[in-house]
Length: 90
Image (cartoon, rainbow, N blue to C red):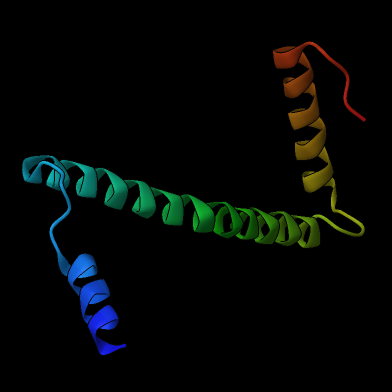
């Protein structure tokens, strides 16, 4: 039994029949792809969380009754948006 285990270990440890100069390029490509995948996996949820917090903060800021300055600024922003984008909001 130990002879079979020794032979299996020799096969695992043995250098495969590939060009050695091609291995670093392949290893670099796989490493870069893995790093980019990890970055993309965590970037979207973090960005979504930041946007959610900003929207929630803005909603709390403009929720409830407003004074006339805030109402005039919001109406001005709506008019500017309608002129810029050519459509009606609200």
